[in-house]
Length: 179
Image (cartoon, rainbow, N blue to C red; front, side):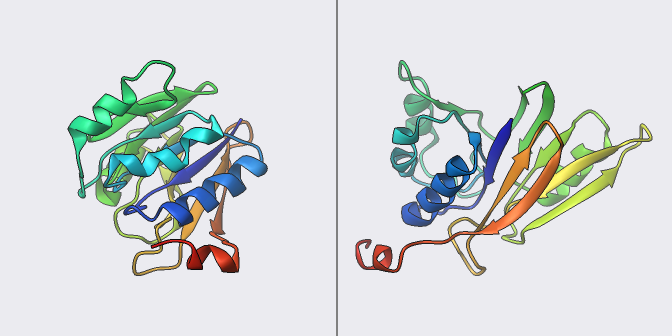
């Protein structure tokens, strides 16, 4: 199963939609958002894609009450977890947290196949040695919103446990139609 990993969208709807659309075209079946979505209404650009969206809040929390309301609507694809999330997708144990230092600590436990984070807007993919003698994949997709860094996202294949970073590509006319 392929997944799209994003973080730090900071209400940049066009860039977030472009990243998730590209990931969906490449086979992504779910979206993991590692925080700093900010306005819950930003998710409206992703809802028509019909992909499950797993989101945590980050340090720019926006409106957690409204995020919880959106997530609780019937037939909704959005799951909102709060500060962090422990989930299982395609048989893989995944931990989402916004902060890289917290993510590295969780990765070292050996309890997770994949740990995803954001916050510092620095895209990276690493394998962290665990205290159990194995390793955990640690993915920071950077900032899909392009805040103080180029807009990026990560694609993951949970079957092969491979991950790649991608720059967000938008159509030239898209910048003229947003405000």
